[in-house]
Image (cartoon, rainbow, N blue to C red; front, side):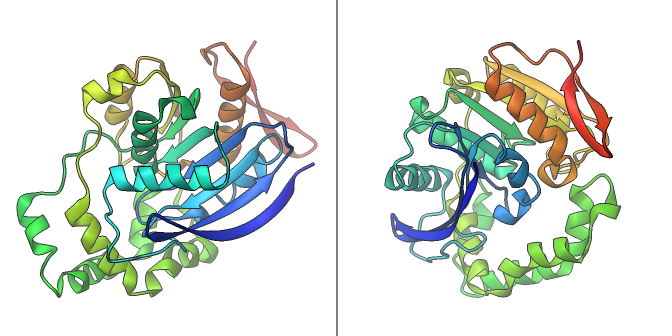
Length: 298
């Protein structure tokens, strides 16, 4: 029987960590969801109810995003964020889990597994970022200028929520007022722009090929065929560098897989976690009583 334990905030390593927790059963596996850049737990809102049918689920807003802290003293590097999330898991007594990371959240998952390989036997990367170098020297220097946070704010305002959402989905009809407001709300607090300026300065490059080769965790890589943010070529490269990985490409999908294909993502995640065999077969849609589920082909 699943039970929503609600949302809480813990102060970890100098910053507030907001999280939502859903308990399926004491013996069920625990999935930890890590969102992407400029996002929050909101991006998993349609996937969480599906995952809760089989698993305990913890969704985290990693700082400075969502409802987590935006301390200007916090070091917003991947390494420090990953160590902060590991300390958070220690604080709530999670010794083993299945990490699920979307976009930048995928890179944070990779850092977490580099720092603590025993945390996850299996992990899922949804359109994960990869192979990005650290910010350029000029941009890092500019981040020290007092008015730089206003430049960041102006840049985000100019691009706009609507344009950003249109860029990350394949089917733009999915965009509604709930989605617009959900992705806009965290940016109504000006502290986010000060923290983003610090992130520009602190963010190191993504894990190297050598680091990726060293990871023993089994990975499922799910990718949108029409991803314009992190193209499929990145997924293929990660698949080659993560020795225990499998890559599955979803048709008619862009970058925002948890929003665009929640049922299909859930089905692949469930099968991957519960099976010891590779998902070499494609899932097919099965309609019953007006609902669509996904099953593996025979």
